[in-house]
Amino acid sequence: MYTGDRCTILFQLSSDIAQRHTRLCPSSRCPSSCLLAALFFFHLLDISGWKWLDRYRIHESAEVKSRNLASRWDVVWAVVLQHSVQTMLGIFWLTDAPPYTLSGHQEAMSTIGRILVSIIHRTIGDEAGQDFLESRGAGIVQWLYWWGIPMAQLFFAMFVIDTWQYFLHRLMHTNKFLYKHLHSVHHRLYVPYAFGALYNHPVEGFLLDTMGAMVAEYLSCLTIRQSILLFAFSTCKTVDDHCGYNFPFDPLQILSTNNADYHDIHHQTIGIKSNFSQPFFVHWDTLLGTRMTRKDIETRRNKTKTKTT
Image (cartoon, rainbow, N blue to C red; front, side):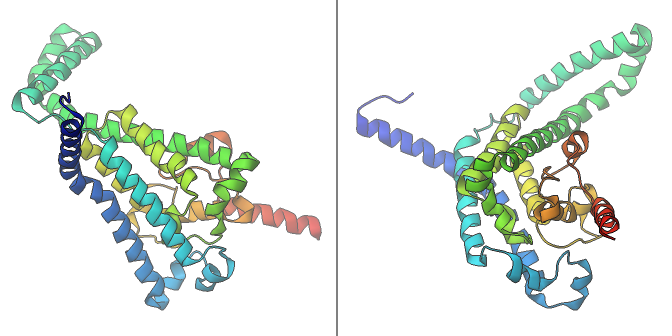
């Protein structure tokens, strides 16, 4: 509550913002640091000239210059703008978490314990349930509190982001106005590369990426640490999905079939109405019939050749 004259109120408000910025700034820089590290890693690969990388390139190096309609500087400035906006919003969006106390942890685990007791007794009965809880109950409660629930929150947040991005991304392809004035900017990169991961129209960047992350964080009730982990991971995943390399040893490409090769299909003419899912999983494409694989492309091309001969 701010009281006093205008100058006093302004000073109090400015002090609060400054203190909050100081507390959150190191954490809020984590996604930015991950972005820069991922971008420069792949940029070093692009300019290295190492011949052994050619076997993993999805496109020839010359295609980046000959087929893309946006210059490197256009891409860099757009990425800097979008990530600056995201960082500033993150500083003001993420709320301060209450201080961690032993009593707070104990109270939360007691609540989980009461729920667990009720579920176990209803599932396997009072006598068997009591024996089970006496031998394993404490360990299960601690695992749920420290690992199970936080991981479930993160996976739910990933599902929210995927859902938000799939349907909004698909809308930007089916709505001519949105595609022409917003999403077509991103598709000026016919051949994706790492720096182009966040190359978007500023309005699209806010609606698709920033708003999606904010909604996921809010609905999942994430802590600041969880939010920073989610945003850093999604940032690295997005860069990796646009890196232009299909590495068999890339952990981010092994975790999900929604990888660089999958998203590259979407950037090609044949797949521009497919593979809307990003950045984590492909379930929406699979369920709604918009998934396209390299095998699908080959089958379609063979059918076309058969018709023409």
